[in-house]
Every structure is written in structure tokens, then in C-alpha cells.
Image (cartoon, rainbow, N blue to C red; front, top):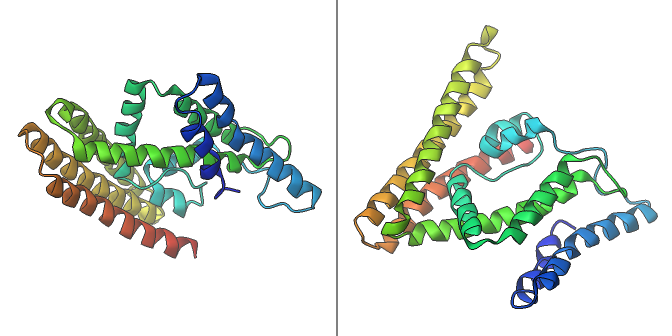
Amino acid sequence: MAAIVPWLLCPAAFIGKNRRGWVGASLSVLPFLAILVFFSASAHLRLFPMPVRTSLHPKDLTGLFAPLVGITRRLAPLGSYHIPIAALMMGLSMLLAARRFGILAIVAVGTTLAFCRSFFGVSPLMWLALPTVCGSVIIGAGTQALLSAGPADRKWVLGGAGALAALSIVMLLLATKCFRIFAGLGDKVAELFVSTAYRYILGTVALLIIFLIARAKVRLQWLRQVVLGSAMGVDIFFGAQYMVDTIF
């Protein structure tokens, strides 16, 4: 069902694009209805694919900014990797500037339902598929924006670099706090916070390089792709390796 959700958003994206607003809004409801029908049919067949009593908890938000720590603590899978957070911020700012409030509404409704209790036999975690899909697309759009940023966009690039730098400081402070736990019981988590801080620092350096390129009023598209792609590649490769080793 989670794999089908992205395809169910295609009618709203393509058919309702150049029509009246109510057409696109009606088609956007299709994934929600499909999830309800799927779990209703599954219950009728005595098939329960996901636990219906499991929902998101505020502590699961830790995985949004520190996914390695979230995986270690067996928190719900929330968020992506570290450096793409800057691309997510860039994509969200683009959506707000373009007034694409419909996409933000889907994200908000899906996230809210994931924190609520189960109803109609639907697992709350299933609703998380909707903001996850939308967030992935927003990150992709934000990444493209970073690669194409011009002199007028350099403040947004600098803002993303500042956000990653602030997150790196927060992670180092949390690491210091964990290192102070009695008998070294928090050392493992502290090392993960330090590793997370290094990734945010790497992303900060990559965005500062892109900022300098944009400020110099030159494109150098290939250099931007190498810098940002290398930083994200390192983040994803080592992050995914740790997550797979931890889960399996």
C-alpha cells in the first residue's frame, strides 16, 4: 500500500493541474480513500499488515534531525538524511513563494493523522507515507534549486548553511550532555551525535561553496553538482550503512 501511494497522487498532479481548484482537491483525496479501503478489506480478510495501535510520538521527532540516533533508539522512521534538510527548507520556501498550499495541506493532514489514534482500523503509521512522499519531492525540488541558485537566491543558500551550522552546534551540545552520563552509559549515543554534527558541518561547507559561486555571479553547474552530490553521497552512504547494520 505504501508503494502505491505516490502513484495515487499522480491524477491530482497531472489531471487537476490546469483545471479548477476543486478538481485537484478532490483527486488529492484519492490516496486517503485508498488507504481506508485497503485496511477495511484487509480486516475483512483477517489480514493485519501493520499494528493499528502504533502511532507517532513527539520523541520520534528526534529522528527528523538525528536519524542515526532515532534508528538506535528504535524510534519510528521519520525524516531522511542530514544534508537534505537544507534542500527541504529550500523546497518549502519555494512552495510558500509559489503558494502551493495544497501540497502543504497534504503533508499537514498526513502528519497529523500519523500522531493520532487509529480509526477505521487504519494504522496511524500508514498515513506517514503521504508526508514522506511529498517530502521526498520537496527535497528533490530544493536540491535542484540549490544547483540553479543565482545571485538573487544567495540569501536562501546562506540561510540553509546557517541552519545546518546551527544544527551541528546543537548536536555537539547534546553529545557533551551524553558524555557526562554516569559510568559512560551515554557514550554510544554521544558518538552518534558527534557523527551527526560532522555531517551537518560537511553540508554547511558544501552550501557555503555554492553561496560563493552564486555570489560571484557564475554558474559552474558541474562544480555545484560535484560539491553537493559528494556531500550528500557521503552522508547517504555511511548513514545507510549504519542503519542497515543496526536494523539487521
